[in-house]
Image (tube, rainbow, N blue to C red; front, side):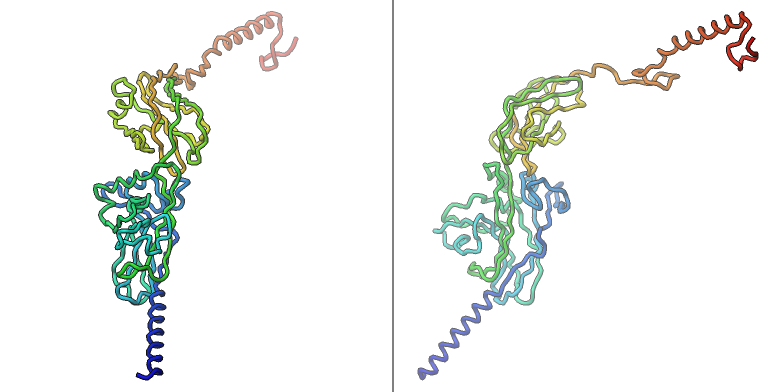
Length: 386
């Protein structure tokens, strides 16, 4: 082969390689909507809650403890285009850093740290024109490694984790009450797990822990009410207020075991409370508050009560020490309507009758005296002045 032909052949290989590289970089991913649809697992199936109102810190999406407990699923509408290699496919990864870097998500080299973890995969052939896909991301998978996995431990995607026996454990990975931002990244990759083309990142705020409760909680009973008070607390960026929880004491006791026997879940050190909503006795959205009152309670019944902090993500923190008190029955019965009188007992106008009758008697006496002197008491009396 002549030097000239050799040069031309080498140039052809370079150009071909450049063309392949250019084609390999043409893959792209885009999200058709700024926010995914939300589904919660309730009563045995997933319910669309996309239009349900969200707590302040979770707009528009976000994840709080209740969302995780109900296995929140986010359905993203994704458009993929430019896929020319038959082995290219879409994967979704989560992490706190750039997951498009191959080294940050390497599932092959077990001697390297892997600060990103896979949360969804689409292995359907994508060769051809642009395609629109629905990609489901379960937030338990996103939260599973909120702290990056240990170096050298590969973390391949486990599609059965979110609804398996270990899935609920993802709801307890956080220890601070501050929200933790995580990145969910949609990445085109080759069969060798190398990122190609253009990826897209979706930021997701997660908040699974609420502030600690106040101390010095005490309750007193009033007329059908419980009045709770506590010591003032220091400022916490995550605390927006307090909630009072009260339930009839099962046996007259007031300890935490008594409350648990009544169906309350009062975890210690978990950073969250799961209390039945029927025991929510009042809320105040003011982190400086030191008092809450619950009304319309049964008199003569002993109540156990705790106070929790609330955060802007809708989480209730761990409970305070329990306190007990017994509301009294209302001091007086409500006003009732008397038979034969369109008036209430609290506004009894019968007290006016004696004075009214006495006035009539006085007018009659004056009329008789004037008549005895031969004069009338007015022109309507049938006579004229004398």
